Length: 385
Image (cartoon, helix red, strand yellow):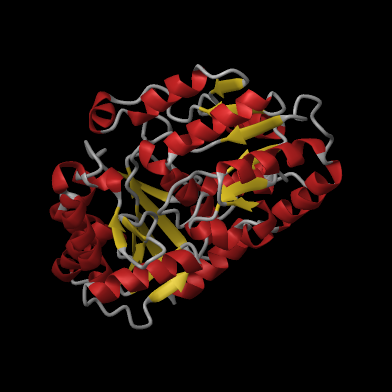
């Protein structure tokens, strides 16, 4: 099977902070191991030397990534690569890709990978636009473009049951029939970030440290995390390590949303809170995770999946989480909370109760076993067959 993987990269200056790129970088070699031929078309190469690479432009903004595909480039790429399958990392581009397939005379299967859902649903079933994609009222056009993308695809790949439920509900509301297109294929874990807690040597500095390794965008619910951090720091029992994943962002990205910089300043001002950077180094990132006792999930309402949560769990770190979206589906119910007081109590118990921590460290580690790249690659290829 010849796979052409079309990948938009939103963080070319810090690839380690771009989960779409990490997904492709982990998946592409596993697909090759499983017998596929893979070419990645992206602003930066992903995979290993066995994977082909076609360099594409970095879109100036997240909206250009959705609304300005180069059909001439797509036609030329399809004609040169002659793929059996084209994977659209940006679902909104699927109609343009379908047009390019038509012009190129290709009968390749078109799979849309729903790396990001531009909507979510509240407890009452109301569809909510993603605030990060609603600048100048663009949220509804993005939603409609996403629906058009779903309609143009032969396969629709999502990470989780929660994402499948949301995608199906949104498609139905916009009269898009997904039929049997939908497939649940989780993201692979990073095998470099796997540590069995049963055999790991405890880090002497990890005793009271909770780590927050998520993007600091406001739409990730970071303001709620800031409030929780303030309460935790007041107890003096728990110290927090907050990841500054982005480093220095491009002016174009800060111009659309400067919340990561604002949230970082708020967190850095709190006692017992340390803001740290992995500097884009995966080894340093692993050491920072290893030096923590537990992880904290984001407060993101529209969370269909989180690679950062899987990173913590693969390292044997229990993760506490609000009862939201995929988090409530995946995280052990004993570690889910509904109020800040419950979150503080869980954090303190993970720090002080060794038996409770050991139990949940084992459960966290075990919860990632099915996400090994070889297993995910097999599921991915099966979904494309």
